[in-house]
Amino acid sequence: MWYGLLDGRVYLETKAKSQKVMNLRRAPQISCSVEAGESYDQLRGVVIEGTAAIIEDTSADEYWAAAISVFERYERAYTEEMRPLVQQMMNKRVVIRIDPVRVRSWDHRKLGLAPMTVAGSTAEYLTAQSP
Image 1 (cartoon, rainbow, N blue to C red):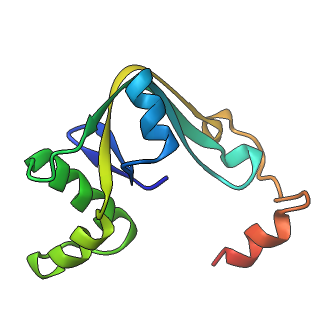
Image 2: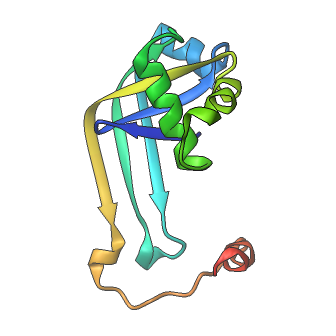
């Protein structure tokens, strides 16, 4: 899922009628993870567990700040001229704020392992994208 960051919190945007939103309405517990690295010696990431707050009010400052953060993360720097693009992106969508309860992270780069080659059945797809 696309995500943005505001004041140290993770925000997601998703379809208002999605199954994940229906699930969060029943039980607001949520977890998400973000990982990076293509080989074991480079793996790093974070898992955030917490409570989800569904923000539906499209006039709320927090709603638009989160939407702009997501837009900037995946598209480009925001300017007011881009507001119609962000509005289109957010059509029939809600924002989910994750209020963290527990955060865990790891960074295999700290292990001091020798560089490893990327291997396995998906390796050709990963190395084809590398600069």
